[in-house]
Image (cartoon, rainbow, N blue to C red):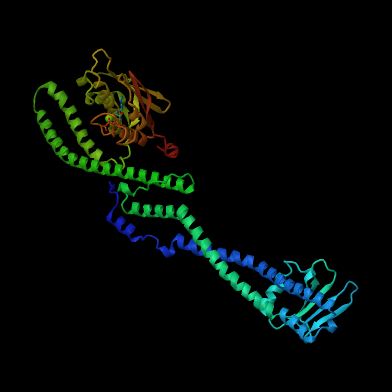
Length: 496
Ligand SMILES: Nc1ncnc2c1ncn2[C@@H]1O[C@H](COP(=O)(O)OP(=O)(O)OP(=O)(O)O)[C@@H](O)[C@H]1O
Ligand SMILES: [Mg+2]
């Protein structure tokens, strides 16, 4: 029986599995991912915002140019000294300012040096955020040496103001703006990452780490009660997972304890069995000597005694074999059930306990079974009944054990009825479960399990038909061996 909870090899293997290092843990991944995602989000926000920045920057210049133009217009541009015009142009970084009135008449208001050609024409009246994105990126990536002509209206005025200026100032301002945005984005992403990390670490990763640790600890020493996780009081998925893990670990531990119990029991049985076999062998020798006594009563008892001792030796080996090996396949023959039941009656000790044993089987009833195994099935069921009734001390209660049999087609059904107190709840709940069904002191809980296993090996079953105070009925169903039709036909075809 292999029931040791954890072998050395298991421990070494489990011990070799290290806890997840921090750098490869979920927390580190989460932290890096959060920074990356926030940066991506910032870039997505940055693209329209740099376009917007460019529009604003140009509009600002145009507004300043418009204000200057109005002053120049009032003073009559041609009369204003060239130094004033230059100062104005320098202040707004332009090469020339012009204005076109409602009638389409253009006037050059100030000019420092007229560029030979203009590379880019920007109509601020038709610039929207969406169509400004590509020119903005273009300015940043490829600009710096271009001349731009910017024009548009300002305020409610119908006049169109025009400005010719190089784009390097705009580009420089855009870079400064981008740099600031990058620094702020980085700060925001780190700040967000720390917040998200802290929150998720507390809500999710921490408990997952606990579960991982608990699983590793549990696999190293599954029998230590402290290694069962204590679930937190939460109702979300993690709470459910923790609860399930705790239940699983607890039931595994219970199973291990049971296995250990079985192993201990197996060991104890082996020890007892070893000595018991020797004692029984001595008894066999003594019974041989009984055969020499010339008393007819003794002579009639000796064969029974010898058979009983043989069985006892076989049983003690059988108990050992239980759980380790399969029962041998039944060697089936047609049997006279009446005689088999008589033998059962002899060994279960009904008479000695003052219990009436009634063999109600028809003497001509035949059954197709392994004699030894059917004997064990019936003696286990009958012995239980005798034990249950022997425990009752009330003298007026009827104590009778009846074995009857009926045949339905090819199926034999043996009914074992007693007038005892009925099965206790524990026995009912674990009927046929080895080691668990026993509800009496000194019982191992193997009797019914063995009986059921042997009956099943015959293709049949043992079932509890009813159990109330005063009437308990067990039924053993044994179907006849199926006929192998092919073989039977072959035998018929063969010439005699
Ligand atoms: N006819 C019965 N009347 C009352 N209780 C019964 C009867 N048959 C079985 N039981 C109950 O069912 C339990 C299980 O029986 P089972 O034969 O499997 O184990 P056991 O008799 O306790 O131990 P073992 O047979 O291995 O020595 C018994 O302990 C007993 O409480
Ligand atoms: Mg029993």
